[in-house]
Amino acid sequence: MMMSALTLAAADLDQNKVTPGVLGFIVFAVIGGAVWLLMKSMNKHMKRVDFEEAPDPSGEAGKTTA
Image 1 (spheres, rainbow, N blue to C red):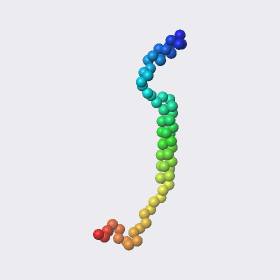
Image 2 (tube, helix red, strand yellow):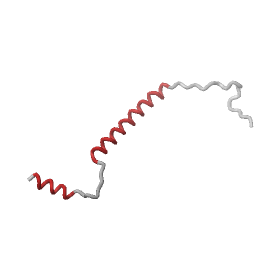
Image 3 (cartoon, rainbow, N blue to C red):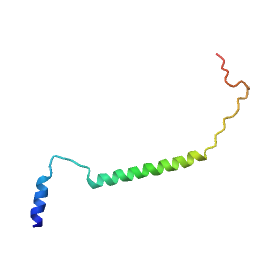
Image 4 (cartoon, rainbow, N blue to C red):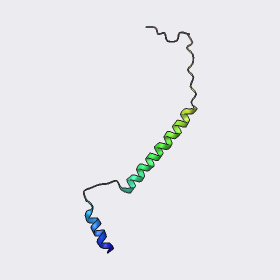
């Protein structure tokens, strides 16, 4: 009974069709998780940045000489 079910299932498969399968899904999920963790870490580090622009020493902000 089991062998007949396996042969029917094998007959339904297209031999010319290529799919990524379970391994492809696992690799994609790991890469997605790594990107998520990197984005989370980047956001944490960017929140710590305290940037203050130094004042213009000449005192003429916005003026350019051409």
